[in-house]
Image (cartoon, rainbow, N blue to C red; front, side, top):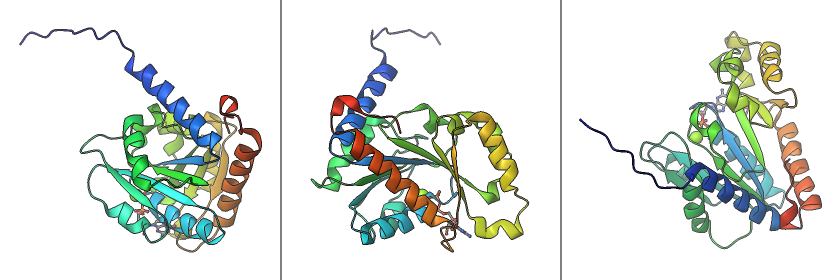
Length: 232
Ligand SMILES: Nc1nc2c(ncn2[C@@H]2O[C@H](COP(=O)(O)OP(=O)(O)O)[C@@H](O)[C@H]2O)c(=O)[nH]1
Ligand SMILES: [Mg+2]
């Protein structure tokens, strides 16, 4: 079979990066902190978002959620009792991309949120290579996955600002060293914030809430001018 190369004379990755930057600036201009969660499937992204949305809404903040999966609306249905949530089903793609975010956002309505959470498709590889205009990228690593994972998936850790070590209520039952995981992650990205927590018991979640509120305070204090968007 012969193949043919068709030049389109456009750098699509560059266009996506520019779109992500514009989105990030627009969200900063309206004081919406965009927080994106990455992890392997089942690390506890949706469980943490359920708890987080409930807490932030109770504290008077407005919260919206965009959640990506290959198929089904299950996560958006789980999140709907706590905050407006829209499911993005990729139909096979292993990560979200900027055009999907731009199309889904209006489905959350006209409201300007204090926090917009984006749960990416469960996967430690492809999502790390795509920017979605987030101000903060968080990677979840659950204790059931093994403490050797940062070194195996370095890009996901290198491009994140914080690691949530999730499911710490299961530590007595699995061979996972918080110290080893932290050491591995810091070797890749020394500036990572590290937050061990359990969405099930609530242990450690206060530090996570404080982290989010501090990040939004910085955004509000430093980014009234869209041309001046900080990298948090
Ligand atoms: N023991 C325990 N289980 C958890 C915790 N967080 C999530 N889970 C469970 O882990 C499974 C996957 O969680 P989910 O939030 O769907 O993960 P996601 O695929 O990353 O969104 C579910 O059965 C959750 O109930 C936790 O902190 N502790
Ligand atoms: Mg989920």
